[in-house]
Figure 1 (cartoon, rainbow, N blue to C red):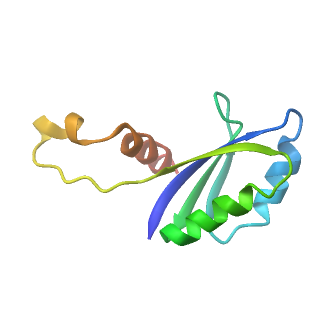
Figure 2 (cartoon, rainbow, N blue to C red; figure 1 turned 135 degrees about the vertical axis):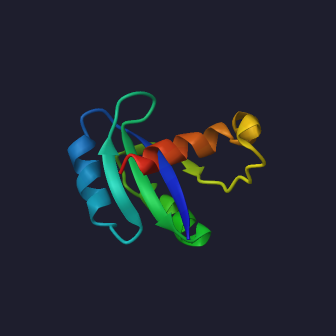
Length: 102
């Protein structure tokens, strides 16, 4: 099983419509969060790589979604704490922070 964060940008004023459409796709969705910043909605997904990929392709069929950006969690081997920051990618840190908040 893999975990991913999908950042979704939507048309102005369509948050409720998109949130409702996303709630109907609960198979892989662990959480749907309205957010501020470069995205409007953040979706936490868990499944195989193919399942996540197909789900994101399916998101793009929702007419009020403008763009998606998917961040896949990656496994990182830690040699020692002194090397932690150089071995952890920004992507892994973002995913871990969002997923651990749950």
